[in-house]
Length: 187
Image 1: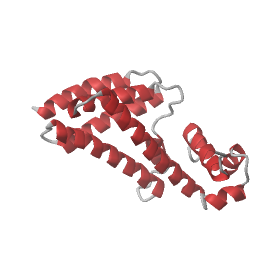
Image 2: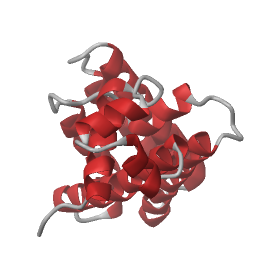
Image 3: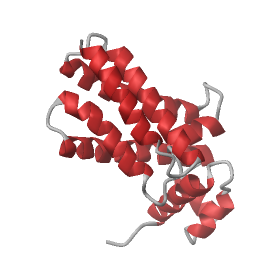
């Protein structure tokens, strides 16, 4: 099936936004990478912000689907899945094209909380923490929301550490800390 101009624009923008950052990527660069014109880009995406939000929403959907299937493939009970999260994160951090979390990066580039790009980033991490809290609840955690926040902070810290210094071992250390937090939460 042939790829449409809209799909080419979206694919080019997605690649550039993740590899070069959102603000550093101009509309002209996206149009050029998609082998089209600015006019075509604006036909499908009325503004760059619309394109950024579409990129983040698709990234959210794709990442959560991939992530949850990876966790499910590594563990078969909620408590084991809480630790499998760290194994999957470690796997993701090791890929050569890793450039950090698109949502952390976007929130840093658009720091005002009322900004729609910032809001989409917040929504992603709210869903992520809810996923962890649900696993914590199923595991019998006495405080699933607190455990979810603590584990999420470990994950976010590992992501940023790995982004700043490749092969930092942050995911391994985060997993070790997670073991203690999970055990403490289940007592």
